[in-house]
Image (cartoon, rainbow, N blue to C red; front, side, top):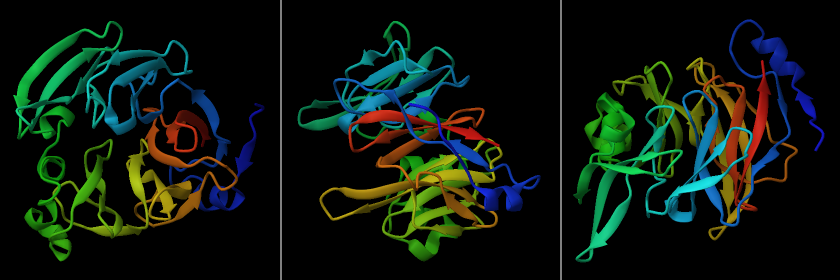
Length: 280
């Protein structure tokens, strides 16, 4: 498919020399199509590979950044939930098993080339996922206690009792973007102060400058997604714009490459991974 760049003239004028927001982007292009549905893409630290998981976070697949050489390296239930690349070769994940009718979650390292598994922590009913994602401060609470975060983090007390989901730490470690269930997307400082609403949005993915992020805005009819678009948002000004306005895809989870040049997402329509090239 011939790449078509969509130029946002108004954005160029308002952002040139001020904010590191993309000024042009390609239409979504198919990156990975497999026999099974894939979701929740995650880039390797150098952007040379991309991992994804299957429906319900079952298993892990890895491919080159161009979508080639796709292979499955894990079949475990839950392996893809909040998985992360620990280095250029290994993925840290938290698969689970059912033992005596209890869900036991363990921590594993999986070699992205061979699929060799190294157990880091044995199965437990109360695994601390923050040890997997390297979380500290408010982010740690959001990861480990999503149902208690609004009560335990003073800056979120106005929403006490609501769950926090999908927290994302900015690249410089100073901010957290996250959802409060039924309330939309928010951003705060790493210590939980400075809460700011970004309106309707989900699955935030930061751009490298830690001032801008990508998010999805999804609509549903109570049974299935009916529409979805990806927006770029400046967390300081609130300025936002749609980068998939002419696309027929239904983006759900998104991931920005380490250098900010690519955005990958899972498409709910066909269960494939797509990519958008970003220019600045």
